[in-house]
Length: 154
Image (cartoon, rainbow, N blue to C red; front, side, top):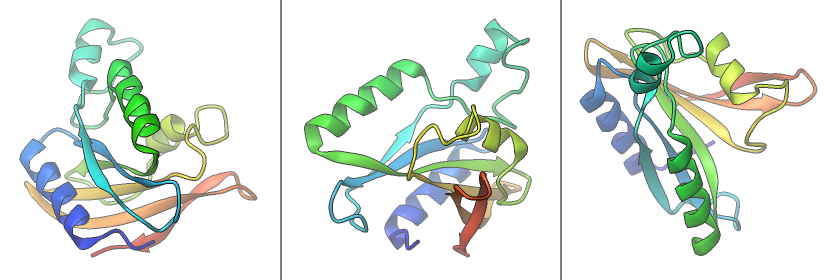
């Protein structure tokens, strides 16, 4: 997994800007070739709004979770169809914690034991005291039914 340097730098800048809230977004690219990239698509983390409206179903705040507005996800799906793109990577940051794939990350990424977005990798950026400190990419292993670290980026 080789994420272009300019995309990784942009994700880290977004993560630092949005600290102490988790940032989120996607890296998109053409369907073919599989290793091609086209653009970064930052998303808005609406976790705090949903937590405020329904704390029972959204017990975490944006400091420890991210949630992309369903309407924004629909907009992205339309963009993908129009541009002939696909999601290559879904990214988010961890606030004052490591670049690991948490139990919560797994619950969201594979809600019924299978990936919600098959073939998509996940990038987690650790932000410590407002500075990006580490980044790792995670990929689904269908035989083990879990995500594993396939690259540490810095």
